[in-house]
Every structure is written in C-alpha cells, then in structure tokens.
Image (cartoon, rainbow, N blue to C red):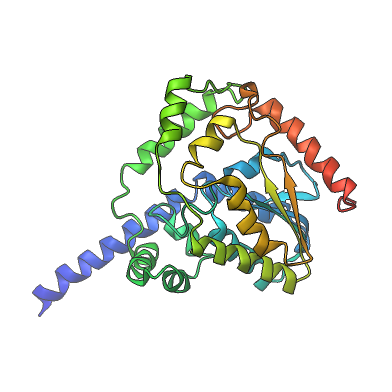
Length: 302
C-alpha cells in the first residue's frame, strides 16, 4: 500500500509546488501589476470614472490622484469586463461612470484563452461562461487548470515574458506605424476572416448595460481611434454601419448610455499610431485631452 501511495503523494506534492510557483511568478506579469495599481489608487472604494476594456483603453492617459482610473487589461473582451465590473460591485465599490471600449473587433470573439487563467479565476464565473458559450467542458477544463495545473503547457512563457518585456521597455513609444502597401491592403480587404457579430458578445454587452442601470452607473461606450488599415482589415465580413446599428439598437434602449465616437479622427494619419490600432505616446496625450473635454461638455467631469 505504501508503495502505491508514496508515488501518488509525490506527484500531487510536485503538482502543488509547480502550480504555486507559477502563480507566484505569474503575478509579476503586467496584468497583475495593472490590478495592483488600481486597488492601490482607489480610496474608500469610490471610483468616479472607471476605465474597462482591451488595450485600446490605454489610449486614455491617467495620472496620480486622477478621477479617471484604469482597470482595463490587454485582450479584455466584454465578457471579461462584465465579470470584473460585477466583482467590484459585489465587493462594495461605488462607481459613478464606466468608460468601455466599443470597437469594431469587440464581437469577433468572446470568453477566455489559455493565458492568465489563475488571474481570471479571481473574477470570471467559468461555469456560467461555459453555459453561455455552449462550451461547458472547455471552461470546466479552464477552471481545473486555473486552480490546480495553471503551469501546464506554459513553461516557455517565463522566457517569453522576461525577454519580451525587456525588449518592449527598450522600444520607444513614439515609434510610428507604417501600413502595408496598397496591394497588401487590397488583399486583406478581399479576404474574409469570418468576423461577425457573435451573439455571446452581444449578450455580455447587454449584461454590462443592465448591471450599470441597476447600480446607477453612467455607461460611456468609446470608439477608440484606429487606422484605416485596421478598420478595413477587421470589417471584411460585415458592413460596419450595420454592425454598429445592430449594437446601438441594444445599448441605446437604455437611458444611461452614451457613445463617444473617435474612431476615425486619425484615420489616415499613421504617425499617430505605433501599430495599426494603438496610439503613440504623443497621440495618447492629445486623445486623452479630447476625452476629458468631452466629459466636461457632457457635465460628467467634476
């Protein structure tokens, strides 16, 4: 009996140590640092202007003791934003306004991937998300990995994280984007990537609107600046006007929703971008001023 139990206990013990070690190392990743910054800056659990969403949200610069506070994360979709917002509300945070990305790519995918599962385990209801997406078995697997085997298949990420973060720190945020030539753009526009309005994404967008309504949160949907190249690359399978008309019919049925449209303000000015859809340092400052001016005009920014 001991001969059987000993190997099992050794395997379980090794698994526990590897999982805890990975969690400890993984907490140094950017996504954890952003959370630490948020919770460190919020005082008395009161948030005037909460910013949620994907990396486009970082086009808005925030400062120390600022009324605008980031709680966004890279690769964050509406499902992730909903669960993070729900977490804050359930933990007693008072939020007056929410700024959420309203991009052309927001409904092309929903749910989670294999990265940072132990991070998302803090916020996301894996089982509910599995039911919504009709993929319960996959999300049950994600829950198992998040809690017991988060390191599985991710050994190389340590090397990638430390080398890439070092290289990114060395790169200037002022680097500008050079779009492909006309032929390459034309080829991209002719291809169809199957990106349509996914009903699961629309479901979670409406969940965000509903939870904001229930908690008297003013929701501001922000169309962040993107390049013409990015716009056409990600709208090959649908007409953008129809895309937004369909989404607007959902969100504008509620009184607490506004839309700030800055999508095309730098449409063909590629010097404002460090890639096809992320603003450069100087452009972020300029765009942040525009957002604050818009909030002032709408009497939100006190």
